[in-house]
Length: 140
Length: 86
Image (tube, rainbow over all chains, first blue to last red; front, side, top):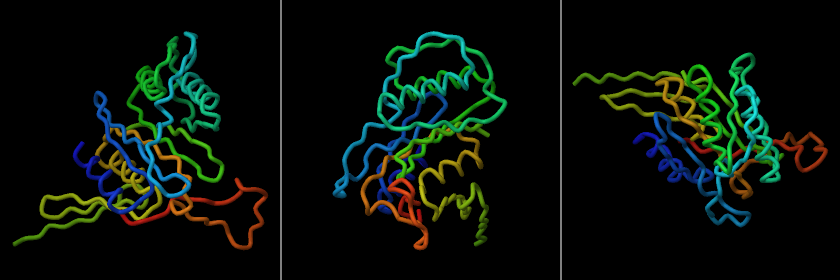
């Protein structure tokens, strides 16, 4: 965790956009953008997208389908497009998970826990289209 | 004194340098934090998730739209986070 904390500090010291926090959850680490400059250049705390609570009824879906449903729910909640970039022909395991007011980050983590192998995500933000891209990748 | 030094490429644009038992990770790519996270995943197999910040401040991004290109609207521009070596 130390290197990730150093990375967040180095990014701030270098003046890169945003500030980042590091959290350890089980055997994973989350590097989360926590502050960003507003239109006037003043750093303000942000509510990370994946903190947004999602509610999804229990329904049999694939892991891919569940992650897509989380992204669709986020798009509606925050009024911005949240597109998924999912690997082909994997994450086809079936699950009947549902969520009630669960932070999207934990919903995604729970969904990926149902898949074979280890998976991580990268959430990128496209400035011009104001669109989030949720990339799911296999951990190596 | 023997100085052992190696430079290895990780994810595109991420460089791992080893010297005297210390690893230094650098990048000069945009989204430097995200790039280094990707490099750490690839090199060490760490399970690290990364979440961008939603950039709005003009000083935090570069407009890379080609001068000759006629954008069809405000979304039709190539805006990328400002780059600084990390």
